[in-house]
Length: 195
Image (cartoon, rainbow, N blue to C red):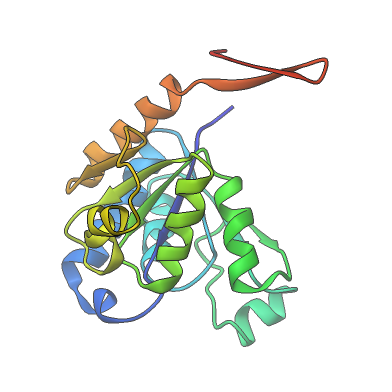
């Protein structure tokens, strides 16, 4: 099965006005596609959509997890794009609940820029033990993750991976996912091991 990498980040705000950050988001999508991973995001505008565009332009598969109940609500109410997606799951769950489904559908997540919504996505991914990549230098909450963890008295751990280069970050994430122990269910007993 292909690795699913979630891209979480700024849907709007100051990081969206930085051309270098938009380019990095597109480059991130490109390398997710080139490593034959599936890009998962919240089917929202902004940096996650820029990553989706980068993936599609490079032959990748993009899954959007929309907060909307329908395509009409997705476009009209949430003002969200649909052109860079192979499949959009219309959850009807709203923004916050959609985030949980988005993260749980991903093997790892990458943060790019971001504000309070991205902070929420980070904390959910962190608490659920997901591998979290941080695209350094993209502004917003992404550049504050070490401070957030220190303030919350949480360990950095080896599941949080930082890099300023989109290609290197994706390569590190893919390797980390492959090396991550999987949970195997046998007769309602849980054992940890690698497939």
